[in-house]
Structures are given as C-alpha cells and as structure tokens.
Length: 318
Image (cartoon, rainbow, N blue to C red; front, side, top):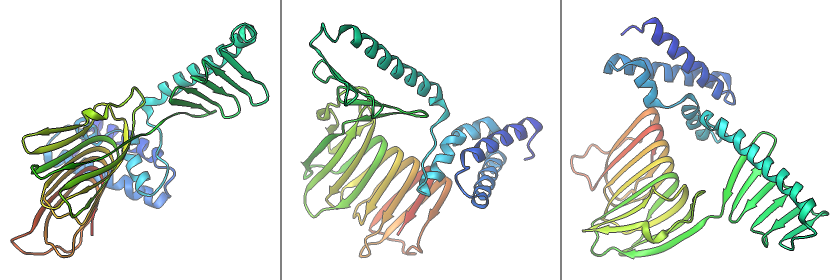
C-alpha cells in the first residue's frame, strides 16, 4: 500500500526524531535501526490496513523506541520528553525550597532550636533531620526521599524496601507475577517452596508488602503493579508449576525452568535458558526488535510449553 503525502510526512517526522534520539549510536548502526523501524511501520500499514497514526502509536514515542536500542547496547537511556516540563518544574521547586529555607534560616536560626545550621559543612537540618539540605551535594532529603538538583537534571532516589520470604506451594498449581518496572530472575529449586528476594521502590508512599501476595483457589499471585514503582527480584521456585509473568518495562531472566511458562514484556529483553535434559516447545514473538533462537527439537511431544512475547525489545533463547 502506497503511503499518501500526509502519512509520508508523519513517518519522516517520526524517523527524524528517532534518529535524533539515537545519536549516541554509530552512524551505520543508527541507519540500520531507522531502516528497520521504517520498514516495520510501512509493512504494518500495508498488511493490517491500519492508519499510520495507529501503527506509530502502538510502537510508542521515538524516545521510547530509542531507549530500547540504547539499553540493549548498554548506553544510557534518554529522558522521555513528556517529563521535560516536570523536570524543570521540579528544579524550580527545588531551588525555591533551598532559597526559601536559606532565607528563613538567617531570620530564625537564633530563635528556633529546631534548626541546625552548619556553615562549614554547608548543611541545614530541620526537625531533627527530617528535612536535610546539603549545599555541597546539591540535594534535599525529605524523610526517606531524596531530590538531587543538578544544572541539567533532577533525579529522585528512595530507600529500597526489602521484600523477602517463602511460600509453601504444595496446594498451588500456578504462579502469577505482575509488575511495571524492573528486573526479575527466575530459577529452579528442588523444594515445595517459592522463595523470593526483592528490593522494591516507590516514590509516592510506603509499600504495604502484606497486600502484594494473593492466593485464590490454587493460584498464587504476586501483584506489584499498584504500589511498587520499581523492583529487582530473584525468585526460586519448584518444578512443575505453571508460571505466568507480566512486566511492562525491564528485563526477565529464566534459567533452566521445568514448567510451562507464559511471559509478556512491553519494553525490554527476555532471556530464557533451557535445561539441557528437557525438551521445550518455544513460541517467541517480538513485535519490534529481534530474537535469537537456537535450532529447536522437531519432536511433537515436549516436556514444557514456553510462550515469550515482547512488544519492543529482544528475546534470546539458549
């Protein structure tokens, strides 16, 4: 299907913004990526008959697509445009906080014992350190949260919450794990327990870990989509149980699992390492990106079924 002038212009603008977002990648490789994305968009429009804006919308913004290629190569992802205004707004708020506090302190430090001013260290502590302004480090600590203010960046850091434990799965037939951002690693353990070791982060409020695990009938669900902003988890689970994993952004690693698996990822990478003593039927689908698959057995009967889906990113099976 030939693109009309309006769609060609829209595609050219999209690819130009993508190329700009990929400027930290070499020119030759960058050109290959642009060609790959251009071909994918044109082919999707032609085969599905969907309008150009719908196909591009499904891919994501140029910055989102670029970040996937950058992260694959170990390069620093770029900040998404939609946060540009927020970044400067936060920078303004940070500057306002510092200037406001510094001005107030010169007026009140001799009157209020709740203020602790250390001119040599360039630090101001308020309410016993609940608010801690560090001029040298360019940061404002608010309780557990930390705002760093630089010339060109504003970033947030928060204490990671440990989420560790185990569950006896003798009456469980399936496990479901859901999250938004982070990394999950799954391996096998010769026991009847699910063991997990996680670091969870949320910028808005405390995380009530007691609400993360639900058991209904014979299915155990770990739902980290509501209160968890980011996570890094290691799971060890017994063989034989069906495993269903859903992650929006990040990385999934599966190592020599002996169970049926269904894994979905929007942006990022999936690595699946097979147990050499078992046979697998692997269905790996990548909408935008690439996959690396070995020569799989042509048997009709398999020990386990594995379905891997990535919207933007890559899949590797070893």
